[in-house]
Length: 67
Image (tube, rainbow, N blue to C red; front, side, top):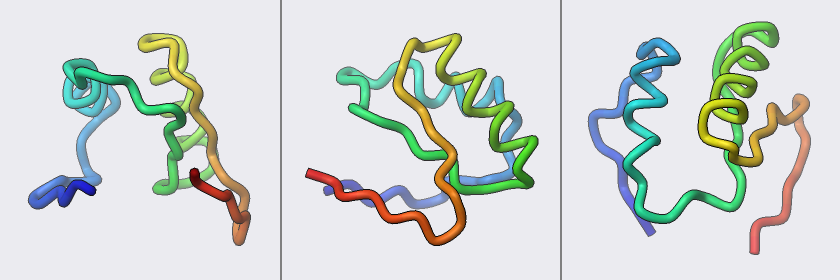
C-alpha cells in the first residue's frame, strides 16, 4: 500500500506524465477520476498514448473490482 502525501490534482497533463513516467513497474490500470468529462478523457488519452498504459475514466457510480 502507498500513501501519497502532497499530491496536487492541479498539475497539467505534462506534469502528471512526468510524475508517472519513472514508475519502476507500470500499473495494471489507471483510473482518471478528477475533472470535467472532456478534460478527464483528454488526460486518459495523454497517458494511454504517451505511456502505453491501460487507462479509463469510470462512469459516475461505476464499480470496479480490484484484484
